[in-house]
Image 1 (cartoon, helix red, strand yellow):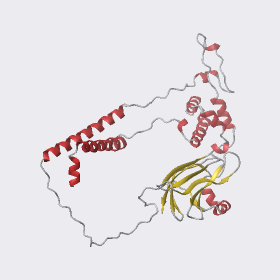
Image 2 (tube, one colour; image 1 turned 120 degrees about the vertical axis):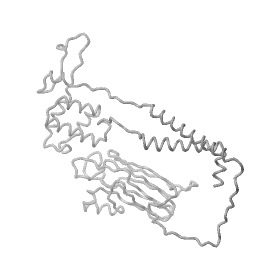
Image 3 (cartoon, helix red, strand yellow; image 1 turned 45 degrees about the vertical axis):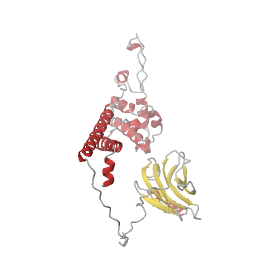
Length: 355
């Protein structure tokens, strides 16, 4: 208590305390609690490629049922420049169609574009490119892409900074006023000396895994994405003094199917300790790999297999190191292969401590 009172009497200390409190109230309470940042009006072209394929398949299915040319052009424009490349990757199996006629017919419709009129010419003199079965009148009614509204506004940021300064200033003023009103010398409080004969009380120890409070020696974040056929991340583990202690990493362990890109159904996480003769390895496998006896048997020879789930954690230990990994994000790819058989994206957070 005595230290707190002496700290309050210093103007610089009061200013720092007011600034910190103002930042906490302004950023945490107001910025994250009352007025959090929100993302609005995200378009289909901002989605992950797997969800863009689903969006395009639903657009084709809607056109087959409704035959609404205006609506299909409006939805097609939402994909932007990615639309044509995405359309070429679609197959009947991806969209669950009985044949490829629907995709082919849709491709003919979306390529219809009205040629802009030249200045000073009549509309009857401008040629129009059409597909089979579509008249120029239908093409003329197709909507043009409207500019997106939005943008960053600095007004909320200015309001937030002003409120932060006001709250900090009020806090400093109140603390200074309180310190002056107290006045005089404060009585000294006699500090009691701890009794050396008091016995220490031991509490029950919690499991070391997932409960370590000290900061790790090293911490890494790694992400596998489909199309990264050469994915193999490795990281050096060093002590606080810069001494080399070991290495850890993540790489591709097993693939399924044929063709490019690789369909990765399992990844391996490994930990090397310079003080241990054995490298510890665990294999992160998909649900399909876990249910396939042949694949699971091959993975057993590479390390301990684990079925991947979002948010799961696991621990790996060697003679002098302990590694804790967390599945931050995991998405299965969609395609002609069995469901949940290979990964589209998988992100791990790896932390390493000295034992």
